[in-house]
Image (cartoon, rainbow, N blue to C red):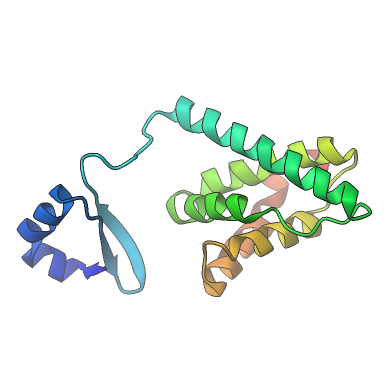
Amino acid sequence: MRSITDAKTKFNALVSEAQAGQTAHIVSGANVVAHLVPATARIIDDAYVLTSMLQALVQREVDWIVKDCKKNGGELYSAGGIMGRVLGWAWRTDAALFMQIVSDYTVRLAAGIGRPVRADEIRALIRQSLREALTDGEIATADAHLARNWDEWMMSDVR
């Protein structure tokens, strides 16, 4: 991690590192504000491709949790580590995308278990899974954002 000041003064070195395959994280205070990545970095800049990939992942993870729920007498325990890593990435990059993924996940989960999913249930699942990717402070902030925006993003049939 490099401060903005350090990144400015060592920009040529950072570019050389990127050419050698290294990613630089540029921070302001405690927040990452930019990345300098190699030209071969896997960046998805096609919204349709990203949406398709996320929908497939969400469905796969919902299928897993539905099976797990049936084995555990209807109890929901975690959205899973992969889901947590994806949600953590989304939270750090785009809060609206984070909410879109949670909304899609919630709708698919409700359909899979055959009943509405309460906000407190989904928030508990999401908090647990976010441990794979975020700090406790980031989880608390993401959870508060989810609570504030729940009604705006969730369809009435999943509440």
